[in-house]
Image 1 (cartoon, rainbow, N blue to C red):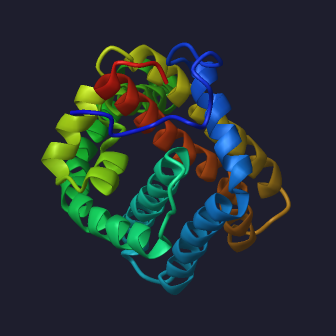
Image 2 (cartoon, helix red, strand yellow):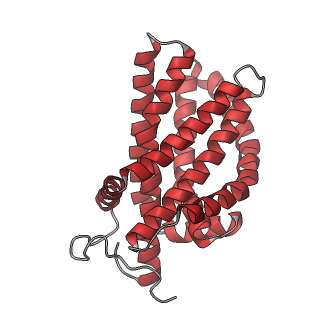
Length: 257
């Protein structure tokens, strides 16, 4: 396909292969290079989702609407982050308007598959929880949550790059899944390690939230949780984008990231 990407960001003799250390290093460097952009994206997503939560707090459909809102905003912000990351790594000018338009398209395209996945996976999760409650009694919720997280992590190792693929290459949902599968093939153990690090970050946020829960009401606790999520989600979005860039370079140009 020819040279689609160039990698001026790090010299070839500095990075010799696709690895956990490489991706984390490049992600941190990218976040430090454009902190206000990526933290601003993350803040915007959390703020908009929080507004929806406040508006829907007395509604019976609050949880459903909040979940869908979080998903749409996260897709849009992740798509915008991917666009900026790729443009920055290519050392070309990034247009925030173009990034927004691409990401909105991506969010609309991914909404229906997301709803279908929830419709399929939710009954499976409920059935798993019921079976575990009979088999393991008191430990069922913890083990069930662990198994669900493990299953989602395995799925993400194969299809976790659908948002960057959709936003950057303007692909539809099915083609984005196929593209993600192609890019991650042969590197899923490394990606699993990277996702595991994000899980640890999520656990830390939950732990801190429980500490604040002792002194805060539900509304204040939601604010704290959203604020704590801003730097973590910003880094995760950048990391997904760097993984996409590295694997695309690796697959298409037969060079190391």
